[in-house]
Image (tube, rainbow, N blue to C red):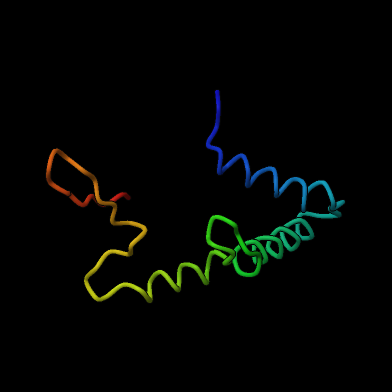
Length: 91
């Protein structure tokens, strides 16, 4: 059964860059190494899907572009139905 492409990509990066490179000596060591990798992945590393930004700065930029009471641009998706344009929210 095929999996989500994003999940498969993430799992491959985690395995190649962290799990295959580290010989864990204890559960605490594994937790510390994985926490450091997660911090780097979410806060430091640029992602091509986010125009070269890390996820946290990209989310901050997205929130800053929204006015009060408006959905962020990446959530509000206009859909064409007949001759009308309808905006749906994806959750």
